[in-house]
Length: 496
Image (cartoon, rainbow, N blue to C red; front, side, top):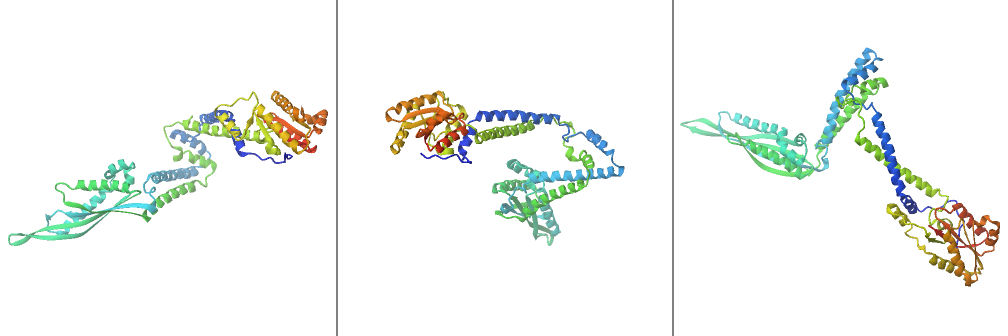
């Protein structure tokens, strides 16, 4: 059978390495728990001891700033206070713009796919007796302007706000209205023999555009607008409004791009202005300003010491758990790669190319739980022989080689025999009694001068080794010795 002297580099089975690590799941879980407690505890202690988290009452801020200001000239203090005032102004505006940017519907709509709904209303004034026709037209223009003003009122969109789950002010921004009053007519009414009275009628158009991300969205807003306009027509109304057309289109909208871009640009400008105010300050001046700016004024009623925060405890515990899992997994990876003892039933075959027969020890116990599942899956491609089956296979191997060349003696060796190995050796001896092949044995034979003689006189070698206890170095020495003596290593038996 083919055999190779161990190379400097040994191939590692990645799947076996992963399953080896996972088979120590109990250790990993223990590491997760331990590190979560340790790192979580350190983080919690840090929060408990941290008294300079940046939230102070006005009085506390003034006291801290005053201590620093003792080293400044009066003129510089005045300049720094002006910087603080300007910074606070920028900060308020920036926070407002950022809130708007994060919540506005304008910034949420895809400008390349804007849904636009257009409502066109025709309005006619109610005929009344007027001497001046232009006055009737002026009245209708005023009516349409009032409706346009109404559409800029958040109250119009309350029903739509409830259905869409967004603020009325963000809906209002998506609506624009334009009026046009091009028509009027005169009807003269006879009163006796003279045309003394004049009935004047004016007509106009009101166009309303609604933009949104979906058809349902714009239709919901349109229903609120139509409901509002309908409510304006009542008994004694000076006009009559009729919905002439309602159309929907979808496409690119440059105005939405511009409006969204302007908001972002404004935020960037404000933040840049803040940076420019502070960039030339010394460390002491920066600290002075910090105590007086809005960033340090999140809650005037909250004490300077926040203390332990639940989310902070969770965060540090999760970090600890992750580090614990990584640490334990890394430990077992190094254990696998740097192992000095046989780490798997594949070990001898992978390193030396020797046929390997696997078996379970008599005291082998099946692992339970998730770790046991990984351990069993790790050897899913391995056939484990029982003792009788193993003896028959070894006998067949010896006899098959005997037919090819004359084999008179086989030496069975190991880095350390167990009681199971002794039973196997006795079984092999009994099985080979009638074949004329002598079976000799001895552990650590290459270190014993008398056994070296017996091995050298043999025609083949069988090695018995054990996962977890047999030394990789000594196994290598056994196989190298056999190669030097030109002995055939018939097979290796690995006990798990």
